[in-house]
Amino acid sequence: MFGKPAIVNPSRLDAAKWLFSPENPLTARVAVNRIWARLFGRGLVETEEDFGTQGAQPSHPELLDYLSISYRDDLKYSQKALLKMLVTSRTYKQSALRSQIARRVDPENRWLSGMPRVRLSAEVIRDQALAVSGLLATKMGGPPVMPPQPPGIWKTPYSGMQWVTSTGDDRYRRGLYTYWRRSNPYPSMLTFDTGQGDVCTMRRIRTNTPLQALVTMNDPVYVEAAGALAAGALKIPMDARGRIQWMFERATGRRASDADIQPLKRLLTSALHQYRGPGVEKAKALLGGANANVSKSEDPGMQAALTVVANAILNLDEVLMRP
Image (tube, rainbow, N blue to C red; front, side, top):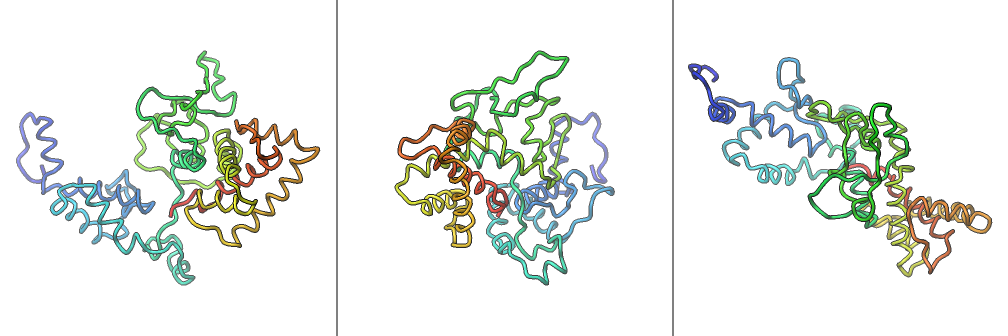
C-alpha cells in the first residue's frame, strides 16, 4: 500500500480502503478524467483506459491535479458537485466558434480555446431522433426489445435465433434496452462506434464515415422518426415555411434563420414535384416505409415531401453534434 507494510491475507475491505486512501491519487484522477471526457469529448489524459507509462501524458497536468484533489477532499467524491463545477466553468460555457488563429495554432483544440464539438454517442443519436419526433417510449425497466433493423443481419448457419421486430411502444424504447448479441450487434449503433460487447471498452474512438450518413438517412428507425416529425408538423395550421420552422426548432432548439429555411424550402419544392401527380404511389411507399398514417388534412405528396425535409433536418450536423 504505497510504502506501508504489506497486509497479510488482505480482504476486499482492505482493497476498498486502499482505493480511497489519501496515499493513492489514482482513483480520484481516473474518475475526474472520465467525467471530463464525457463533457468535453476527450479526457485530460486522452487514454482513459491507461494511466501508466504506455498512456498519453495529461494535456493540463496542473488542472488534473487540482480537480482530483478537490473531488477527493472538498467534494467528498460527489459526482453531482463535480459536474456542477465543470458545467458552470467558463471553459464549458464558451462558444464552439473558434478564431482562425486558434484553429491554426491548435487545430485539435487540445488547449480548449473553444468548446469542443462532439458527436453524440450511438445510443443517444437514436434516442434523440425518437424524442424529437415524439416517438420515444419513456417506459423504464423490463426485458430487452428488438427495434427495426435491416433484414438478414441474423442469418447465421449455427443458430436458429430470429430477430423479431418489437411492436407498440417497445419498438421505440431507448437504445439502452436494445437486444444485444455479440456476434451480431445492432448494426446502426455499431456504425456509430459503440462497442461490440465482447471486451470491456473504457472509451469509444469516434470515426467519421459515409456509412454513418447512410444509416441516419435510410435506417428504418430514422425514417420512421422523420415520418412522425412530418406528421406532427401537418397537424399545425401553418404554411410550408411555418412547418419547416417548427420541425427545425424542435430538432435544434433554436429558431431557423432565412439562410436555414431557404435550402429546406427548395428541398420541399423538389420533393413535391416528385411525390405529387404521377408520383403519388412513391409517396405512399415512402410513408409506408416510415410507418406513418396518411393525414386526412393533406395529400400524401405533401406528407411525403415533409418527411424528406424532416429527414434532412434530423441529419444536420447541428442535430448530431454537441454543443
